[in-house]
Structure formats: C-alpha cells, structure tokens
Length: 114
Length: 112
Length: 143
Image (cartoon, rainbow over all chains, first blue to last red; front, top):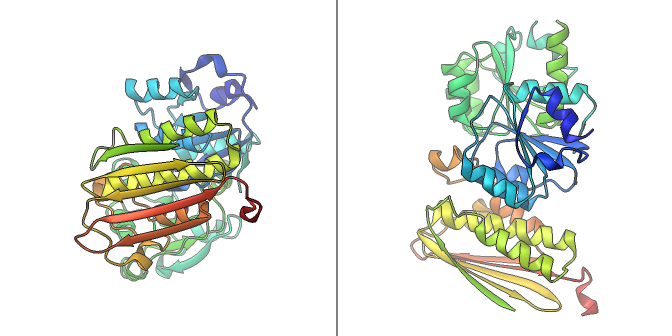
C-alpha cells in the first residue's frame, strides 16, 4: 500500500516529506532498539516506533527505511524533522499505541520482514 | 480472556513464572524502553519486547502486568527467570517478531 | 582515499554523522548498494559504541579498489571481556543509554555479521581499537 493509505489506517498526521506519500510500503517493522532496526535487509519498509529522537532517523537512514510512524502522539521536534527531510524520509505521527498501529497495519495486509 | 486461551495462536512458549500462566489479559503494550512502559502500560497488560534483562520483571511487577513476551526467539537472562518465578510474572518466548505477534494479538483481543 | 573523523564521547546529538557522511561518499563512488549498507551499518554501530561507552575517539576510513577498511580507536575504559562483549544481548550500557534505544547488546555482533574481517583489541584502562574490513567484490580471491 502507499504511505498515504497507511497514514489513513493509523489516523496519522504526516509531518515531513508530504511529496513522497505515493511511495509503496511492503513491510513493517516495530522496534525501539536501534541495533534491532539495523538488522533489516529489505526495502520499502515502514518502521513503527515509540522512540522519538534523532537516532531513529539516523538508524533508518542506515537501513534504507523510508517511512517512520511514531506512536502515542509523540511530539516530533524540529531537529528530527530536518534530519528526516535531508533523507527524504516520511514521518507520520499517530495517536495510537505501537500495539494498535501494528495491529491495524497487520490486518490491512502489510507483511512482516520475517 | 486469559493468556492460556491465546498462547497457542501466537506461538507462545512459557519460559518462567508458571504461576501466572492463566493471568487475565486486559490489553497489550509494545515497547523496548523501560521508562515508556513505566509511564504508559496498563495494569493487566501483556508487554511485548526484545529486552531480556532482569529489569523487565521489576517494571512488570511495579505495573502489575499480566506477562512479558520476548520476541524473535529471545530468552530471558538467568536473573530474569529467577525474578519472574519469584514474582509469579510469566515470561514467554515466541519466534514471531514484534510486528507479527502484535498484529495477531491485537486482532484476537479486538474480536473478544 | 583516506578519511578521518573525530568523535566526542557522550554526544548523542552527533552520533551517526560519520556513518551518514561515509554513506554519501560510498554512494558517490558507486559502490554496490548491498555492500555499502553492510559497511555503514557496522560503522554506525561502532560510532555509537564510541559515543555510548568511551570518552571520545577517531575513525579512519580507507577506501581503495578492493576494499573498505575502517579503524575505530577510542580513549575509554576499555573492554573487560571481549568475548562476552561479542555475545548478543550482553551489554554494559547505562540506563540512560538504554532509554535512547541503544544498549541492546547487539552492536559488536551486528558489526561482525556485516564484516568480512573484524578484530578488536582492548584492555581495561587502555581504550579500544576495532578494525573492520569489507571487500568490494565479494570474491576476494579475484582481486
């Protein structure tokens, strides 16, 4: 599905790189641990996380992840947004918990990377 | 709904804390950050995480969680097992990853 | 090509800047994407280790036609038990570091998995040196 579609499913708000909303997402990965995120090998992945810091963007950059959904209405600061812009990474804020977000995206058919 | 009702459908293997195997589940929380769980997880929730060190039991006990599920085949440390048995908080291991186990559990709980 | 970077210990705001810079260099050199990914992931883990565990360090990156090699040298407390440190899940990270999403105990093993060759030398009180090599053609005998 496209990033635009998944944003709708998670009641999300896009806060960066709105021009990339038609990008396809095939897989989802949920984690707050950077080393865990660094083990992903696929492309077209959405990362679902509750951790809102610049390292999430750096880690996603290293792993070629192009969309991050932050759960629990975490307020995403300007530093995070500008780093994401540099890397053309779409950021989505969702009011739901990571559990809920994973649940809805799983039901909607997004695959796990495993 | 009790953990024992759903353990098979989400590939849970009980590792320790057997006394809590039939705990009631009120919901679930997904996080690998202890402070996040301390701040936001609800009583009776199942906690899904990658973390295996003994602090997870301290947090689970403080928040009265129903159980801890370790994903991707992770197993609790020796100290974690000991604490889990002492507190009666079950620790499960699953081969599934966080996204999949959350996906399945979310949809099971929703139907309940 | 030789690049050198300095890293400040404890400064998480900059952690990852070196890996990001090297990623751009590798892309400009048209290095195979899959190989490049292994290199930058290992470099990022190594860089974060310096920030999380030491007082500061230096990363030297050498790129030639056959391989990318980086050496990370830090001034820090050193590693007491290197074999244990390589174990997945073993971590000496502080609670503060864990709350940032690090300290899962996978850094060194992630680096090793992504390398063709890796060595660590360290002793308590003497800092740590990590050397990592990735061959650009995945058949090193053909170079």
